[in-house]
Image (cartoon, rainbow, N blue to C red; front, side, top):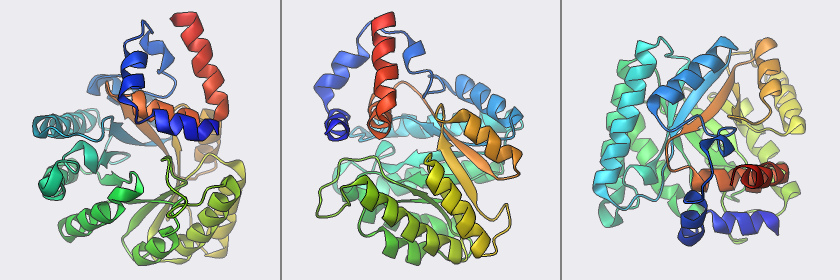
Length: 309
């Protein structure tokens, strides 16, 4: 019940206005968000790199319905890619892009605008020697996102995909995308989805995750195992072994600020461990979904509000 309530609040403009205008310092979100500027994002990336961790940067923002705002988001990505290159942090750092932040939600022309903008980001990423992964959002955008991915991969085959084990369709999508050269991040999913399209219990989502992961590990692509669940991390390792995968033919991914010691442990074992690092002003929806995923985060955030507000 708490998770569903929080996920509903993540899309509430009224609650967002209340929370983001409270006299709360940036220290509250600093555990999960690397800062507001590209400079802060690159500094966080450099610190993670020193610990042997790879990074994917996400400039926060979604559901953009203003063409100029979508353009500013593209420019933010071009800026941070240039800064990563200058700092010598590519190719170990890449970027993740939500299509709704670069035009997907702009009505009938949304997919075309998003594709054109994503192409600009992919081209800039290639120019500095790194890659782009397209984030997946709620189920209403899945087909559009996969269509844009297919178009992008004609010119930028290195573009990564994201699939959500929560959705009932995902095992089939994994089969479609588990081919040579295909990078696929498998996550559980962080959106409030209806029962008609999504598994509703944690156990069912976990079982779906394992089924999907088996498909990816036994395929010819490059699986990106996005989970903080210790049991699923162990299962991923076992499945990689059974599929005769060597380290470097798959990777683990975790969120910035979540289980940092486990991230370092995996890296020290020689695993590729990539940290998903969000930055920017529009942190509200992202943070609330993180609270929904891990109930203990609610306590952390509430204490911060009491101490800082």
